[in-house]
Image 1: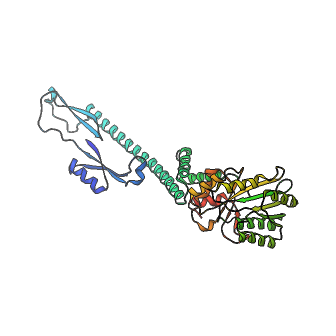
Image 2: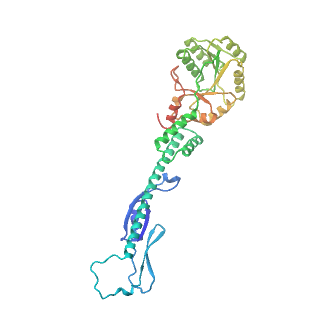
Image 3: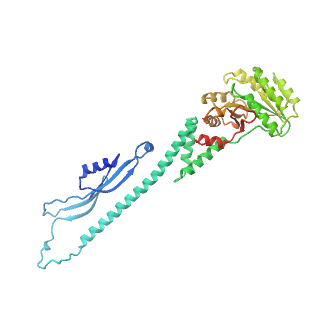
Length: 405
């Protein structure tokens, strides 16, 4: 008996192969769908595999030699001998006694039947193993397709390719065998949340006042962000707050912050030099927090950045201070990198992201975190003061990065 497998794109094509090679006498033993091997298999179509069998024909002419002719089973490229039939007839085949009507099985026939049964069992075992392997492969395909989907979703949300690959590689290396897609999604969700690390909103000092500087490029909404945070601290947290601006380049920004200070009924000062900053801090030492709005600077203007750092460094050591870098979520990734590099001289800087309402792709938040390892604090999503600002929530951002809402 010859058993062969034929693969084609469809069942009809596979059946034609069977007919052409084995003829119309072939018996179809099994029909199943298979998939390609390798990493690229998820992009290739499913194949149809037909297993067919054909009885070998023994020669019709008799041969008086003592040579033996074998019957074999062919599985794929391997041929397995089954049994041999001796062509020479026994000398005592002719006897005077009449032949009994009921013929008893000879030991040789019994052995042949036993071998055939064993072969059938082996064939069934092999087919069962193949089916189990295909089931496992199907589960592996599902996981690969899921990871590919996560990867594509991260890229669509403008997560940098380097960091998207890093996340997928971490999950591929850490996942255990037979991990379900649901568990894998939960693991990715949790690990991405952990990547954002500690969230650090504005807080008062343990003793005395604290100066909080807001720095960043032009046009990101620093002044409005300062007003929102001041409103939250004054109205909700019941803190004593004062407002300062060093942005003497834009009169409109100064007047805007002055208006917010009047509405909130908090002290407001305009300062021009580091010495004035020190004197003002001493004057307002009874307040919990002094929020300092600074002028926006181009990331390529090193002189302006040096002046700004001089302002920040002029604060006496006994006075607590924090620096918050205000960034727009709409800024291109490569431009964000230049901004981060320009402000790397500031110690322990935190990040605030504005204009989340002006983009549907929030990948830059993760990009900035993984590139500069800045601690995150707030996100803003509109111009309304004080409503359109929230403490950064990693769970919300990760859900959106993974395609949720």
